[in-house]
Image (cartoon, rainbow, N blue to C red; front, side, top):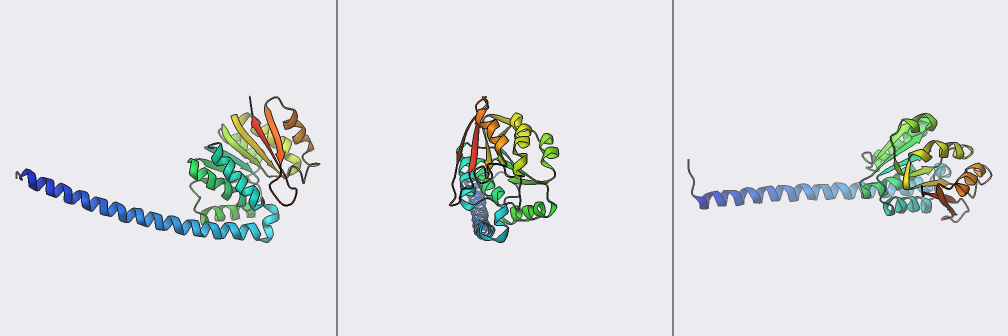
Length: 222
């Protein structure tokens, strides 16, 4: 059946209107879901940042620094060693959510790794953050590089060993961030000696907390 051109145009316009209406409805639903996720995430971050296990997590200001750093360098692939309950992973994950990146976070303790996965899911970051329950020295060699950003927050006395494992997997222009390098300076002395005197890294130690915990940022120059 041949329909007049004007009728076809009306039908097409009507179809376009329906499609647009459905799309607007779905977008509104997505926006609402997104807002709910953000509200839950904010509550979760506040809870984790003030709870008893916080001593095993980074300080909120350090978390914000990690988020800003991930966004600033446009990180697409990030690695964390020492997830604990996932607090720092949530901060880094939020930065990577904006860059379209992904975080792999490794935790050897089974109960903490499980809690990390639960917190990541609750925060709506399960597509951005992958939690790996394993020994970092076994897990990291299996991960493909290069990485744009690596955050070290595992056993402090193992920082130098972590560095030896991750350094080849970081791209030139990428960064390693090591936590608690002022507070635990004696425990990480060999790590600090390595990054501060390596021709491959430019390093600086700074503090973003009320207490002197400290973070060392090492930029890979070659």
